[in-house]
Image (cartoon, rainbow, N blue to C red; front, side, top):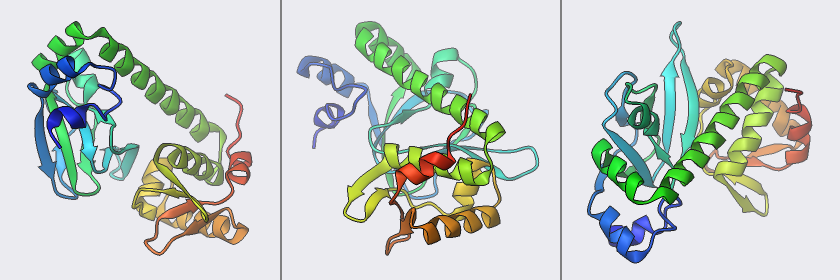
Length: 230
């Protein structure tokens, strides 16, 4: 499919007319990456915004004592790298592919021009940033208020909302997550995550499919564990 057609399927650009999509299509560059490739490192200069056409990205950072801290998982239609473009600072985290991934790249100069031409894109970008800030605040409060069980329950619910596909068996999270990944996401060791997942499975709240993807079978039960008062 032509770049213009692909752009029209991405939430950031879906309100643009055909003529406007033509203009944006002339500015973007397509890039393909293998699984495990680094898109950028923390402290790199922010030179471009990236939009995921197909694939999976994790935004993450190493903590001072070494272990990884995962900030977000992103998939088709999501964008990333916008903070360094908007404030002119260096990258605040690493971005790494979790699968073969195809990205569209907009340089800082091209993005600035597009945002000036099409204010609707600016509004959509700000709305997405606000949602990310809200989820980050929620995760911070949960880390202070919840034990590992509650934190993992909360993030499984969020992942099922953002990356879930409804199946007869439950909501399947369309990410290949290791227990190390989940530990880095909720601030716990792999061993702790293994223990808690085992408990959730015995209760019938989650299940693993034949490809080891997580199926959320009882969101209400997980939600009760994840309740906290900000």
